Image 1 (cartoon, rainbow, N blue to C red):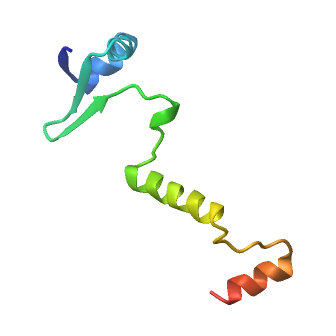
Image 2 (image 1 turned 90 degrees about the horizontal axis):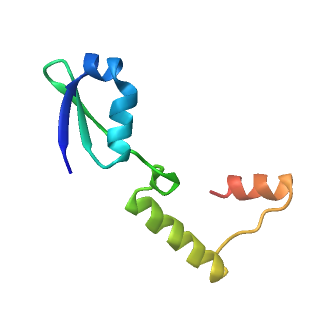
Length: 86
């Protein structure tokens, strides 16, 4: 898997080419100035911002619902009562 470092100017001039290379598996590092760098990485729908911690919380919540550990709120009054009790 090739590693390619480019300047932000090179990236702007040849974006299509760099996107295609990233799609093929190349690692593209875009350098911006002397101190800032970015990695161009393709993502798919499974990569969208779910950390392992967030996934664990979702799994725990699903389990709690299966176990009946939740409060059902169906009306505005029930919601107000619930929120006031927190």
